[in-house]
Length: 586
Image (cartoon, rainbow, N blue to C red; front, side):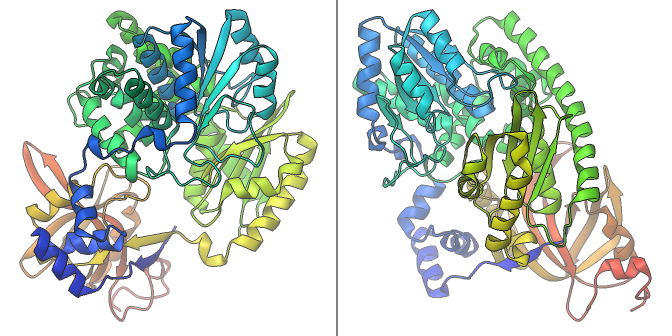
């Protein structure tokens, strides 16, 4: 799908020169950061050279003091505690983190994850009954609980207190919990920004260590878990999320956890420097796989065990489960795409709602994400079984998914999530009404241009400005993710040097340059450009990111193409060449 290019509003050049001079910093870097509202020397210095001391006081989160006091009471009175988590990577890492921390503090603690296939998402009556059976007096939720009104009430009736830690959107009802720690609390503005579920759990751990006068440096060994959960949950990588993930990525490469080491080994990335891309596409799917297909507790055992042999066995099991999950994904995607071809009017429908009794509930979220990538429309996929319909939804930047579901709440049994991702349960007979209502909401809130992906370009530069110093500074922006993407540059009127060719699975490889400056460039999935680029001599406007690649022991700079267009007066595109509507000589 082609994209609309949107060049960021360029800041005042006088300001750029002043900051560049004061910090002795490349003006290109200053221009990008000011364009991202990092617009003072102090903010820029902190962004480029942040450390763990820049984290906020955990007591700035509402109810932290109350939560800490209740947990300390449980520790002192030897009360049994249970951590109630979620079955995705964020929930699994949050559960593992709290389990390890409370164990270290001498707590009598167990954990519980709902079975995705039997219980669905969130705090459940089955889990509360299991807590009662275990003699638990305090449940601590991680990555869930903020909408569990009836369940928290049920727990209280059973003599069990609840401390809620969550990062999902709260609703407009008061929870009868001891404490609710959530950076999205209504009327509150947490300085650390939007945290992941494991991020909130880490703040609780920080607060406990402060109150108990423990060495907080001990918590740094668990930043590997925080980075895993934060990167995998696709939350904004700004503010505290960026700091925690930055130092957590370093901790992953030197982790002392046998399970994480084994997982890195079976994933084939041992010895590499781990980045957010490898977490999202390599490690997270393997951790997620067991939760998607049934029982996620094996993933927690992997991340918390000290037994190297057990760790290796569990890592191999997760790897095998991930292969099964991939096969199920592909089959579900094929069915979904066929349903779209048959039943969805893409010229009119601004949201896609699909349902089937043939889909595994553990993969519909992944498939919904892939449909959003393909069609750039909010997508809801619902699987139907004897217990009703369970749905996963994914969205685009112009459509707040949680708010849209809230407008449909009279048709839903349960729902929760945030702007980009949500889950729901629904009676099958209500699905047609839900689809109609959601389409109506989308038609009101989405314009035609919202359905075309936007490529945001940070600034325009010339190839002569690219050097090792610039690349080194760009690398200091890491870790990259939502709201902190790798800077995208635009260079116009570039000449194609030599003959472009295809590598791998339809990837475009070519050299571009102007004058004496020539760079290798690669465009993933852009192999269809090879023919038109080879048929005529025409300059290109290139949108790209700059990266360093290693090959045969040597490091070099490469341009990774985000999109490309013919330059200047050319009034068509390469599809017209391929279709024969314009000849190859102009």
